[in-house]
Image (tube, rainbow, N blue to C red; front, side, top):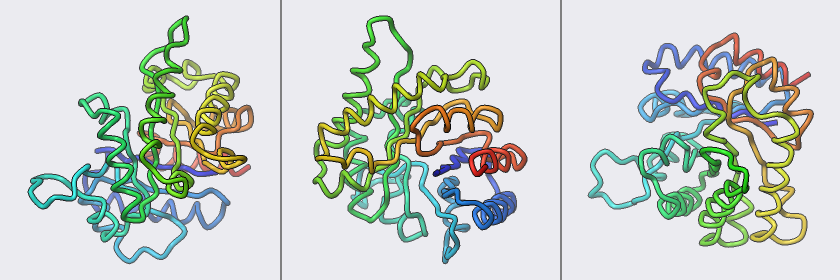
Length: 248
């Protein structure tokens, strides 16, 4: 099981970040859960330097450019140098700001070129009776994977984050059976870009409304390999509960 803790902008200071890192290290040392922390760029640079623990670090986003004439951008190379080994790509909040599938595909290439494992976020904004949302997923995955080599495709993580489920209570979010169907569909699409049994080797995570009460049920009822967690990941009690629920 993998937990990606997306701190978003909830942790603006290093002092709080250090406490959360210490908690993550304790949890990683006593469980078999793989924990990846995604602080904001300035905080990551101060927390990830020289990291040798079982806890890994991820960028929340990277630039699609490597050009020096890009004020305000943070490149994949800069994050790799700062200690990140993963990066989130195509998060729904970035897509909502206008990030296109083509830009996401370019960021995937930039990440892999610098040795970062991309966590590709895909998901529909709403469900429809005619199942057009499946086409959305197919397009998002296909556009991101098409430019990659077969070897590069094996180094990708998929995070399914249905936008309609974000911000809801756990009871209102996705059911175990629905998540199972979506994981199977994602692996079916992956099968179009990977050979033989390779799609089963790609971790598929769920990013939505999860808490300690439903995360174990979702993990047990589906074939999901982990979770992309937002607000709950910066609450010590909630995060501890999530990790322990998956460990037992």
